[in-house]
Length: 115
Length: 113
Image 1 (cartoon, rainbow over the protein chains, first blue to last red):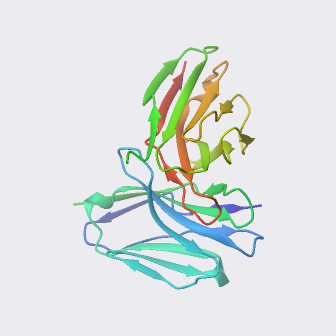
Image 2: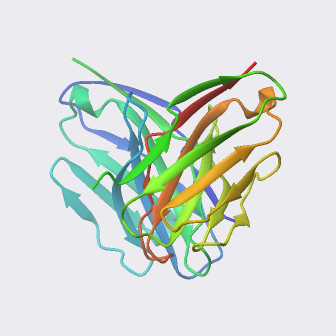
């Protein structure tokens, strides 16, 4: 069975701090896909990144970076120099490589960045 | 492009009433999905469709029905609403999975009294 665990329910930081959101997944598939979505206070879900299981390269996009480690089944997300606009709920999700694309979501991490 | 849109944005129902949530996408995506979001539980898949005229059950399908008469539209129906169906409902669409990303609509907040 697929499972995604985001152990941090809530994180609170002060602006300009770096923050890492953890994501641990379980799957028996050899091919799978990992995603991060952001849900700001307005409520919509915004796609941030997708990572294929066969590509373990880390990725950096501006202040965002992602660390994918198959050995520990983790796909962690780091925000460098956090800003108030980063305050949101962040979801990690796991997609199967062999079926219709069902996403299994983690419970989400509420990030609050204080000025 | 509007992307994925959902109607209505917010609705209050009484127990036993029925309603239909409409999802529309203008990206020519084959796959469409309905999720519900509840506090502390992330998003859970209700039903999905792999193309016009097809539907299939997801993780939590009970109490819901869906239809995909047109490629761009995916309807979610509640025949007899229950308080347990109070939730935020999200529609998503994607090109052929599993490689492609799912793009989500803005959500519909439903309150069943």
